[in-house]
Amino acid sequence: MDKIRVNLYELLLCLSNAQDLAADGAVNHQQEVACLSYHLAEELRLSNQEKSEIFLASLIHDLGVLSTEERRRISMDEPAGICDHAFRGARLMEKFSPMGKPANIVRYHHLPWDSGTGRQFKGQEVPFGSHIIHLADRTCLKINKSENILSQLPGVLAEIRKEENSRFMPAVVDALEAISKKEYIWLDIMSVSPVNTLPLGDNKKFILEMGDIISLAKVFSHIIDFRSKFTARHSAGVAKTAEKLGELIGFSPMECKMLLVAGYLHDIGKLAIDNDVLEKPTSLNEDEFNEIRSHAYYTYRLLETIPQFNTINVWASYHHERLDGKGYPFHIPGENLALGSRVMAVADVFTAVTENRPYREGMRDDKAATLLINQAEDGALDGRIVKLLIDNFQEINDLRVDSQQMASKEYEKWSEKY
View 1 (cartoon, rainbow, N blue to C red):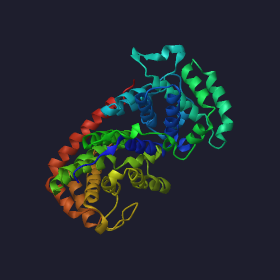
View 2: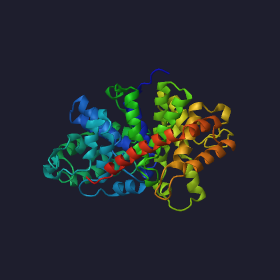
View 3: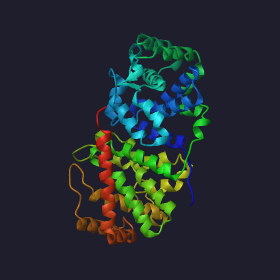
């Protein structure tokens, strides 16, 4: 394979959907906010460029939310002033240069208007789009999905009007009232996939080449890993290990890059898992164990929405399959497991047992090697790949350590208060 080109919008929608899987009653929330924000920007006669930036920002505006509990808390009652998750999300996304302006919009999307004081924050100009998303976010959360949306609109608008000029920018409230008379907008917002109702031609023209895909996949890996202190750098180690194994096996340079992307994304399905389960310090019960096991399934379903990621998806999502067919969630027998999937399985186990975690030290080299050999002999891992790793153990382990130390530094910077 010589080239992969992916639409930025498709990748961001994948991330948005992943986050909303764990949103309890706020399923589809980011899509709903994106749809309403787009219509507000259109009513306010903003330029196509501004509408695009606001739309992309709103689609992932809650990417800095760490846990189900935090999402539940900010959904029920918005605290006065800035929310930490908005700044965390901006820090993550601004690392990817094409999303620089949308990231800045995300940064301030909980800043109150405060009679115009909200035009700036600590000397920095606040984008107009931040106030649009702020209003769209709180409006969508006031809607009761078990009741008719059109019947609720007068009451929702009345509640918003009470906070006009204090919490919400008056011009945006006026725009909300104007579009409240257009029934189709609200029926679209409450539809199964709100963003599919929008004319997104311009947003679908931003095509990413492999270099940008890797950069964005790395951002995604931080969103996945930083939710749990137990695995705050796991994907970085898996990605680098898989890439090196691919190189040693003889994969092409493009295929090695695809392994890197697959490693960064292999646990994206964990965004669907409740943090209470991911962070539980004691043994998991049967339901919790099964919830954890579902993450590879969600990885597959999320990535399959990106047609150009077909091979990357197979390599990423099958990392818990076994050669003897006893893996999960698909129970694929070894003869049907692609070489890239086998590489990912070895890279995942190797990284998991050698990395340090808050509750235990990583295994010594000899013990890690013995475990990998035993799993190969037991029919779980590909023995040829395990041997290749052991023959190059120090080099691969040094790459893993370096990549995870870098991820740790990024985690520390990311988790700083605003």
